[in-house]
Length: 320
Image (cartoon, rainbow, N blue to C red):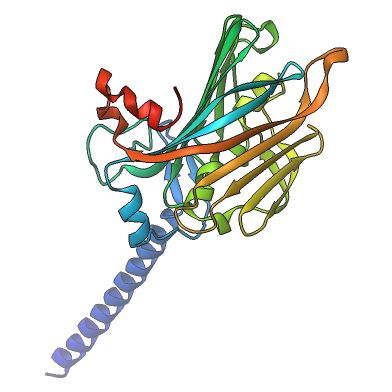
């Protein structure tokens, strides 16, 4: 009988021991899962640490405006500095929300829980330099969560001499490809450490202007500027200030200042902007200021407005 009691005591002790081991393993497993939440696995199987930034919670006002099945289209009167002279033209900013595939980084054709909601900006300019025209378009794909860099940025510039194209993909680093008809800029593929992108600030502003970075910063200038001025795509020292409705960036090394004027109330629409820099080459070079002043803003599912009868919308936008 006494042996049986001792046996029961041993069995109870073993049960307690294995329960304790199981509890320790369970806690360790949960800690590993929590740690893994701070990592992102990219399509190239590289594991990188994700930035821990507070996620922007979209308000009902934001959802009502940006998820109504329409894009916001704003036209601007453009005064563009090029080759040391001012040129007249038009600029258009097209903002629209989309779902984006995180790995191949293109617009998603189907809804999926893994898709990333983005606010896309297509920014276009058209102006003439003498007999030949310029056409510029920059696309920025920025997460609505407002807690990371743009997922992708692309830029194309066409004129009669040729065309140039640049694209940035946000992977473990910024992966950049650049193509040009200029010998010194042709067919480049390189990587940069992540930094603030000037292109993404135009979308960040529309989500929450108060989240715009200020002070002494390191910024990669817009692809439009670096391609037109034949500057290296890299990080430059900059300083930025934010008042109630003015955001300004100064690049001392580039002798360039960008100032954006916006509505301080939601939806924080862009009213105008100015860009001051040295324009032209040699003896014709002078400091000039490009200006864009808003003409009209409309909301429209423009992708459905492709009939001849829909051309009247261009008159509404004062583009014709």
